[in-house]
Image (cartoon, rainbow, N blue to C red; front, side, top):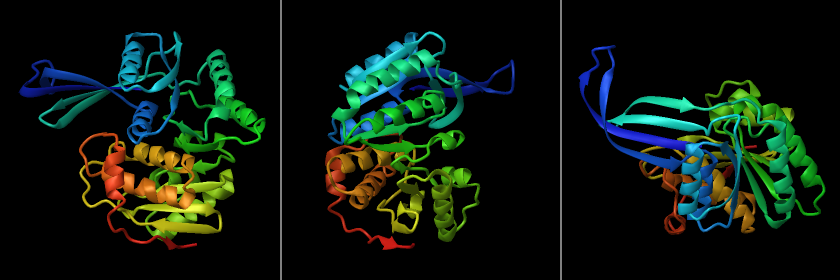
Length: 311
């Protein structure tokens, strides 16, 4: 996914319609979607390969160039049937005026799904963790999940599968290793309303009944995280953020640092604590900024509140 920013200033209203006229002064392209997750893994010192799909167009070429500059190993499948997903944000005097999306959210064609699965078949045994960063653009669909499940079942020691979910795709996430929804996504998946911590716990229990994941992590913004090691055991991890300036990209930071903790053998609880520290660093910065391992190393030296079992 390509995130494009157009920065400018507003000096007048259009004579054609009651809208501001933005005089463009600067443009910037950055990695979005799963690319931002990959950037976070890379910045934290992780070894990774990004497997993704883009359009056979100029925006796809820009994405490849950005990934090369970031020195992220990639396997990108280009399809002529859809455009590269692109979000263009027009910013004037630090205020977002409008966002324009260019995308095709239809399910990826079977031929490309098969190519992606064929590549994964040759790579899964070399990795400890797989992150499925789902943005509901049709790449992660029913056929893909069924094919991935079949590949994992063939391995003696399959990698752990972490899913950052999209509400519309909950039915295809059955029996994954770890789901990482935020409070809103969890409530939508469990068809509940969340107002209290008890509501969050109830929501988690309902998600287990619906999807039967091995583990579940619900991120709650300023209230920290709730880790379900299983449907009968839940731990509250309070937030470690000192100041909150911008929550943009915090979910990407969480799943990237969580995956690295697991890959390093820290165990699930300690990996979640690490991810919570990383999220605290991320929300203390403006914009979607990858947390560096130096920042995280410094953050974990600070005193932090203890986790508490709630279920």
